[in-house]
Length: 240
Image (cartoon, rainbow, N blue to C red; front, side):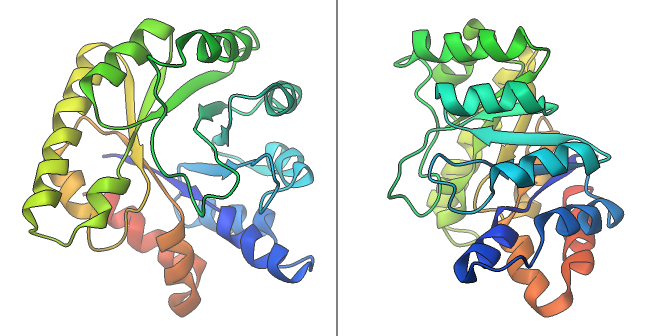
């Protein structure tokens, strides 16, 4: 049974849109955990567009499962991460003008820079995950650089409709990459763009993926059924 990480960034997005104190991502994390989430995932972006430093610090004290901090490979954010000490740090590419993370890290191209941050985090007893495209070369580079986990970017897969040949081709990329990662001894996660329709196929066809980090579709579903029910529904899909 795969684990579910619930990304609560968009709870903070709603709050920041009006500059209010609500909705509170800390409360959202508690509801998600009570509904079965195995992990809470947040992204502290350099521009602080949603999650704020205070959210991170409070969540570190209140999350009862695991706290996964997504972050750019930058000194300021790394220093904050070390001071707070989340359970996991997931290094992701970050562009200021993007609406959401657009792709995976190019581990081979940025090997020396990434290794600096991986070593820095691991020296402080933080598990390190790399957010990468489903590509064998990137999986192998992630192992070589010393990552503990790879999170396979499912954004491309999620662009296409169910049954589309292009979606099936991306599913095969995910399958091969996950299999290779497991063979190399890496913990295998996945996420980005997955929803209540397209997640089930990945879960059934790629058993090597043992963790899914999902946010936007859960928060969107919560608008209609409430956050607790939305998390429970996604947990059921992931746990099949």
